Length: 150
Image 1 (tube, rainbow, N blue to C red):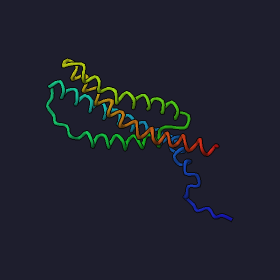
Image 2 (tube, helix red, strand yellow):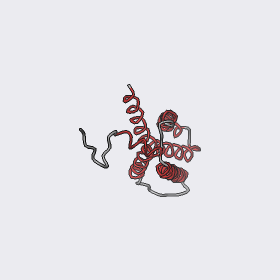
Image 3 (tube, rainbow, N blue to C red):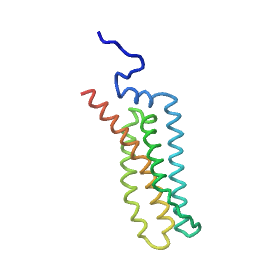
């Protein structure tokens, strides 16, 4: 006879799945998603203003911002994306990740586009840094749920 210890997790994926289904998880995940998007948007605006010469601010916080966005993305992937939303989320994450890398081509359009290009490149890079960790978590959840049913 196996004794069940109170508070132990018998199915590793069940804890993550239940967080995504709970109202608290959805609320926390929603606020974190909004925070992550706003951080990425503000970083893009600052980069665009710097490139346009409107503002002269030496922003060396990019690695720190990307780390914060990655952490927020991990939490969003755990608590906010349910099994029903996983496939749509992963398709969107693939699209965002693919376009964030190719947006640097905008920087080569010409002098008049420097501010716009800087804004778009930094914005997409920050959104990519935010979405990629969430996609890893959701992808692992999908693989786990698929393999346990096989």
